[in-house]
Image (cartoon, rainbow, N blue to C red; front, side, top):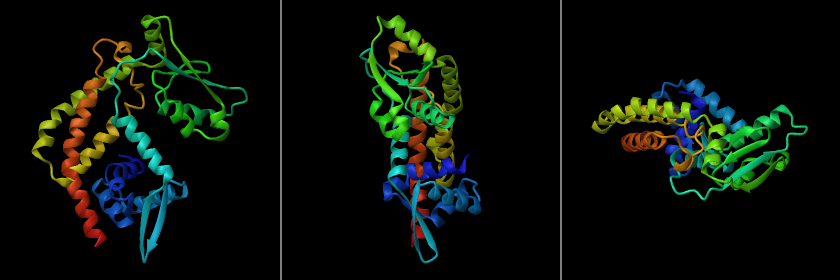
Length: 267
């Protein structure tokens, strides 16, 4: 499990609900349970602070790291993409993001494409990206300055469902994603019975972090298409149900453990 991602997962799952702040000692103890060395924790937190993801305060020899506007927004956006699925009816309207590619340098292109992919837009070809959801506001918030000015948003409808399905097939590799969802179900559904019997708080935390890091790769590849655009036998909804059930069971056991570690080291 990647230490940098684990930090954000711990804040997203726990510390955001207790003020968004954690002492380095608490982070080090919890990351140790996740097999991350103390020196690595110090390096990661120092880098994240320098990159502007956290603010830090010092009391005596103890350093604390607090979420700021940038990291709060990242956690909110990430939680929305991972935990919220939209199975409601679709009004047959696409949001198109048309990218002005003239004079676009490599780094700028990378930033724009990363933001588009993060918010579920799929590349149709050339400058055109599609989403079945109105994510214009989120893209405006994700991109700033010259990057934001490079995108023109258009609302459009096709002449019918067959054309809509062609767009979906061209923008996203649904066959591969569907197979990966099935593999996730086959790996984690059999574990539910063991999770329900209880693992112990520290082991539950380890399993919860593994589960989140494993599952998060799927929603960022999944445009959350309406059912009419999905291939037969789609397994995305079932995979999400397995994830949320496993997650809730594990978090319920891990939360008291995290709280006890924080309380012990904060005293």
